[in-house]
Image (cartoon, rainbow, N blue to C red):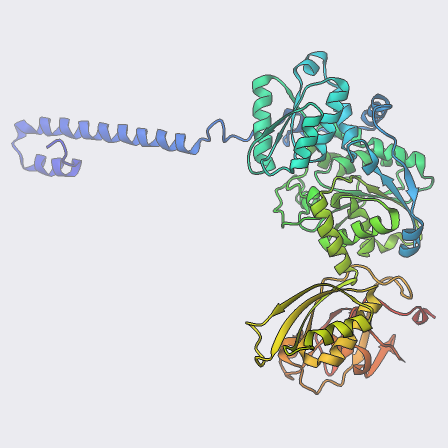
Length: 572
């Protein structure tokens, strides 16, 4: 009877002797009470399951609370400049002759990579340490970082004799771990990412009563970074625009506050990575929001998925323009700085120049512009990859697959042709098993080095003339227009086509469903051109494959193409 349901007991009660009805009612009440007790137990268990454990709760830094953001003022930056004088270098801000000529503007570089630890982070780190009370200095500070903030905090902690603890993810570069330890800091490896390291650092800060210092959003950090803006205005007269990298937003918040207070007419332009546009997302949303990092290498120092709340509220109304740049342009910027400025700069430090090379800021032509080169701590392996990607983006490395004869002399013929064209073979790979032609052929993958885009175009034309449809070129996105002879910008040309021939399937890049005809960038190169119309005026123009940027859909036998190079003669 004890296991029977309430419904069963009630049915039996209706047929039992009246003297037994009270017993049945008591059993029903007991079962109902047991049911309520069980429901309460289950409810409490559900609450416990839904409540994160102390280890799972996201700790909030009181100095960087999104619900109570703090806006820094010019007085904070002035105080920082006074306090860090003598402890942080005043870095040079020098004019670049070659890049000024190439980009058509008066270009200056603020060289923060020349700081002792290789980045601007020293300014904020030293000021934050100096602002501690004597008791806080005795207990020490803690931070979570795998990069420049860790180096700066450890270096100046040693200089000021303040104990520093840094929690790094286990994937942190070994070189930076060793450097931080060499400055006498305590290094703790925890977690697979920076978020896990940050949570552990904040937990340890509470347990050991240490001050946690956020590397890009602590108010003292922002004030320290703002001293870069003060120095720029002191070093370069009549500056028109300052281009600043954006990661967590601390640098641009400080610079914008300083610059807009002293020179409101100076434009402050922020540049972030296309792979992680967290600042733009925050501006559009009106508050800091999480942004998925789309991977990346050269610009990964800017991969901060959520901008700082203090940085956002400070910079939001002061930044004049935001642009994002591709990894190809960052790699090319690193290459240009090495070759033209003899400066080794990390990806995050090169994004300002990348924006100019990518023609994202054409309105700055003819103006006096300062680009902040924020840091130079790039791993040697990443530097090698960046240089190669930069060479590819500059068309100084070309890659192609070609099917040649597998008989003696087949590859020698290819090598001789490359030698005749003045190209150097950097890498070569033979593939026999997956060749779809006859068994006496071999597919050869080649990476060749060329002098410039014109040389690369000449090499391609020669190879196509020799190997016809048996060669395929692999292209990277073009970043920068050739400098001479060329004009900046994007031009629309209408082309009358003679396109009644069949284009091999592997060469089709777009199609017209009605006519069944296909177009290929090569159809607009060299002798395949019928007639060009520029502003409705016929012109004779020979284009290289490297000049063509994109092609719009064909309409009635005509097509609009977008190119990146036009001869200066067209300006007359």
